[in-house]
Amino acid sequence: MKSKEHYSSFSHIYVEEKIRENPRVKRILEHFPNSNRIYINHYKDVFNRSKQSVVAQHNSQALIIAEKTGAKIYEGAPVCQSFGNEHFYYTSCMMNCIFDCEYCYLKGMYPSGNMVIFVNLEEYFAELEGLLKKHPVYLCVSYDADLVACDSLTDYIREWIEFTRKHHNLTIEIRTKSGRCDLWENNDSCDKVIAAFTISPDVVSSRYEHFAATTAERIKAAKCAMDNGFPVRLCFDPMIYCRDWKHAYEKLCNDVFEKIDGAKLWDVSVGSFRISQDYLKKMRREEPDSAIVNFPYDNVGGYYQYPKGLQEDMEGFMVEKVAQYISPDKIFRWETQSK
Image (tube, rainbow, N blue to C red; front, side, top):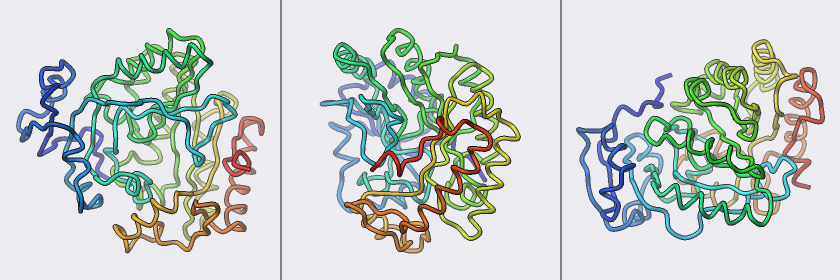
């Protein structure tokens, strides 16, 4: 599978006029000397236009460079793992992903498939410091984009690590489907920066996680992060139903723990696919031929998920397999946390 991690080109790049002289903007633009540059008043003038096709835009993404206004730190969503943290938040210094996973909730959440980079990272840090004065914070920084995959443009991984190192009551999670090892090798480790890798069976990653790193590449990157001193979380989440899913996930488990010492993992998350009913409704219009998107899910409290019996079978099976390699108290299952 061809990777887009090095995003050879964005044919069109939109830049907010007010930040055209921003040093971060200039550094990003240096990567794309041949792209068409269009200066705009506000990113929403492009990103929020009506009648966009998210699926079509992913085949030829444009890049939008902007300044984020308003709130920048948000309380964690119900469908996300809190890992037992009372003060659970997330932030988005980018919107949309360079990868193109068929089942990604971003296709239902955003009106556009184009990618946005917000360059005022210092304002994110300032807002976060205000929260840290009140209580500890557990913050997911890479849910609405894959920061690792795009770090050659932003250098945000280094900045997040350095900021976290300075604040004793902050823990961050950086989640990725990237196979990059260089970031974990070239940045000094921090025990409050959790490197979280979404790991899928080959049949899922090759068919549905377009442009993302292969399963083997992600396992290698996870081991690299661990070997370089970062706490590593493996996310068997979302589990995707497929033909002979038991064989696929058992093989995945064997492949992972052949390379990675389970005793050294920070923890593991297990959860099956679930999504907001509103997001899925939009995705079904955009992807009428997708087996994942059009599966006959059950609606439970406004969220679609696999029928209860299938969900129990899949998650229970994976928990049992993972428990052969890691202490059960380090296995977080989404379903049990959501009750």
